[in-house]
Amino acid sequence: MTEKELRQKVVDTAVSYLGCKEANGSHRKIIDLYNSHKPLARGYAVKYTDAWCSTFASAVAIACGLTDIIPTECGCERHIDLFKKLGSWVENDAYVPSPGDYIFYDWQDGSNYATTNNTGSADHVGIVVSCDGKTIKVIEGNMSDAVGYRKLAVNGRYIRGFGVPKYASKATSAPSGGGEAPTPGKDEKPTPGLAVGSVVTFTGTKHYISSMAVNGKSCKPGEAKVTAVAKSGKHPYHLIKTTGSSSTVYGWVDAADVKEVVPAIVKGSRVKVAKGAKTYNGGSLASYVYTTTYTVIQIDGSRVVIGINGVVTAAVNIKDLTLVG
Image 1: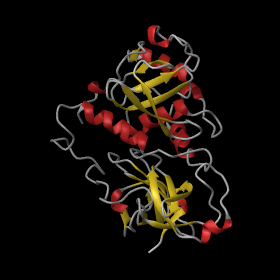
Image 2: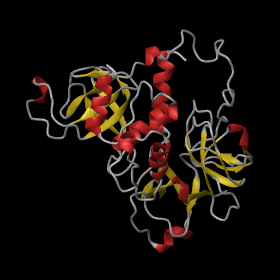
Image 3: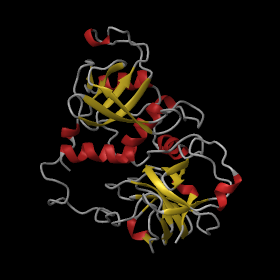
Image 4: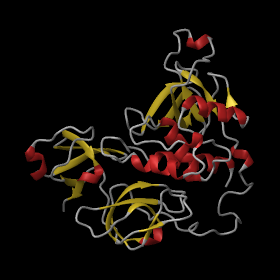
């Protein structure tokens, strides 16, 4: 892979977790992935109830197999120390980052942030998705207890500094597919049209803790729903069994093991809400919602806004929706 492709791989992997949150426990796969990597930073296994922004940033590095250039940690200050030890720390709030760089924040930054360099204690971290020279788009774990996006100005308030992994040291001169030796799963591309929310028949017997994991665990085949997609992963789909399915899948799987695709839920789809489902933020829904057919108005990762005739009814998790007709 080229440096650009490596950076995009990190971004794509991070984005594959978009919408994972504490409210429904979907963030646990992030914690599990972090804890599966040995040796654990500080020898500490992160709990599901701990703050997990650095854990998320580290889990992405683990999933991508890049922990030699992206250190793993569960705390922001120690994370910065490790970037410094690798010679990958940029102590400059005004730095213009690239996709795949790590951005750290200090919520106590002063009002004179534009003319001073923030050297306070870091409180939070995210991964840069894009930057046009003026605005930085970031994806973060533990943002309001979920994986979500943030936008802020270059040299904006609260920027503490940047971890800048040495992607060039891992890059090849040729793009992926340009003469590299084949590896297991490398040629398994995600199925066109398959997306988060697609209901599929899982035919395999193994699932993995990350999209790039080497060793998998046994599970049973059956009907499942796609809950995340890692386009550059060896195991590009994260599946969770559907209600009533005989499958025990809960993890990343090979593209070759995903069959009989049911059309994905997209904007304009007619859907019904699973009985007992909550709003996306964990709130209650009126009883009539479960017996009414709605139209999908908007989709943002796993968050789906539904309504009737353009009037919004609620935002729900895509896993709680079933296509109608």
